[in-house]
Image (cartoon, rainbow, N blue to C red; front, side, top):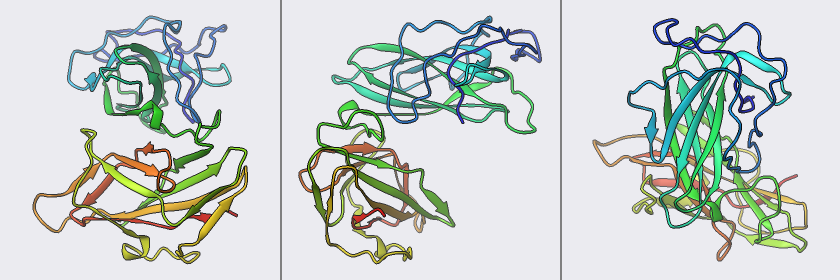
Length: 308
């Protein structure tokens, strides 16, 4: 579980060669900072700082990337129940949106000796800068890695196309979102979920429409979208195209499958984004399945079927 985004304890810049050392006891009145955005994107600005003194951010590569900048580091973090975890690390950062429309950002951080921390920020308006924090927990059995924190990845999508697995129902009346997926021996699978959160029945007939988008926000050409069985036999219910009507509150399931095989030098496709429409003419939702398609040139997609 990610920790709520607050810090506690003190920082000793000289300890351990410039590392962070948390106090054994945390402030008794430390309050949680914001919330972990498990269901919805949230942007946080002008939030109070966590207790304790920040560690200086090392001037090295990895602290600035794609509009995101690490600004402070704190020993410790306050979890969702308000308890202070002195063995954790809190990263404070800024996100600046240079686009002409609102964007939603997913930022993943890495620190030696800690599990990676992530934060979703959005919508961030055009030209705006917002601040946020992410907490990282100590890896089991590992020693703290000081202030060696870097930005692992930054993903940004138009806020109008951000998935909404929770919160208010989108104007389309349906939610489209992805699960965490699975990977084994070069075969990747990610489930696509469709929920009718509106007030009227919603019918799909076939497979979701997909567009593969690269890191530069351009559509990837030359990859064929094929029925999932042409990539792998996944077992379970037969992949049959048929009309599926969802009453309010009901859900449907599809999925994508691909192999990351590389059989030639050059030409491998790596695309972080996938724009999904539940059906032709449906509202687009952009997901981040991190497609490493190798040189296979194929992405399989299953037909919608009702979730039981």
